[in-house]
Length: 237
Length: 292
Image (cartoon, rainbow over all chains, first blue to last red; front, top):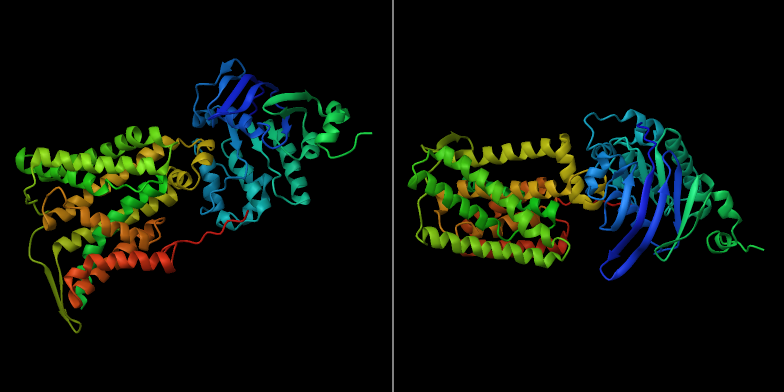
């Protein structure tokens, strides 16, 4: 897998959905090689921020990778830059086989190599010719991540990979994310499952109403009363 | 009876070709192209004019015509539909209606409303087979249409199963947004689907023209029947389009022969209604159950 340790800098990111101001000026600094998580409630602007990084929504402000500003690049060109988004709700191509899904993920590659991805997800190896719509929820999430990895990204943007999955599967996914990261891929993780995200991340941003409310390393955030009350469901005292 | 079925299959094969084009455009862009028949009509006029008026070799004219159709499809999608993709489905449908009328008006302005004879691609006596089954007749035109349908079907099968761009076409048809995140250039897939669809319309025009003559409304009936064929097949798969067309062709022929020619068109509308009531996904529609 490619190891690209350049940082991603986001400056004054703003996104409008028609009259709705979804993201109201966000600055992020995503360190190359890290797992950075973006937390927040529903509608805080997490997914929108992630989509802006991948080029999937129109935005103002600037996003740069290393020294290069990538604002002008459309979504498929950003994949060439190594930025791949694994969308919320997985976005599996249901009527296609597992193999065809993976092939679609490798669309930009000249050579298609299934083996390194299937090493991480052995469960997909047994189901390679199965129609993706017949996989279980956990397997579909694995497939979505595997498909995103097929293009050998430098940056993997994960939008709520734990959504709708059983705790035991969520644990597996957390391990997979750590493993992907240890191979040199920078991971940006959007999550509602705050404890999961904080347990694996190197740095965290908390969004509220389209703005960054808090940021810091997880150990500091875990000490914060606001985080514990609002996002971890615990009473802080 | 046997000969009726063969004739029906031959007409049906043309409907299949119509349906394949419609399904390709619908699958990828989500738009039912009402201008389909008139795109084919306009290109057929162009080929007729090149071959008979400008003295270009017929086969060269056909090649130019099909290339022109592909470009027309791409241009219509890129500049007519894509700018309003984010609005609504209905607005895109209305654009295709507009193009339908523009092409019809243009054809009338340029070439008038007289019927023009289109040169036959294949001529010669039909093949006649005699045997225990009785006599059955195979016209050369039928063989041509079957060959085109078989070639297109096989090409599509290989394209959508084994080529990367074919996989990309299926990916876009299923989930445009995710396909983009995978690095697929959604715009070029959309353009391709319309380019392909319009060239199919041209092919239909070429094979139908010797029979129906060249006129501004020459393909209208084919569009309706192609649409019925696509509905029969579930409007999602090319297999459905092919078999939907063949089945419809045979039904239509049998109805025309044993009941009344006048019922031919009615019957296809009745079929649409029945199929939609009892098989909302079409006779060949795949029921893909996705788990949430």
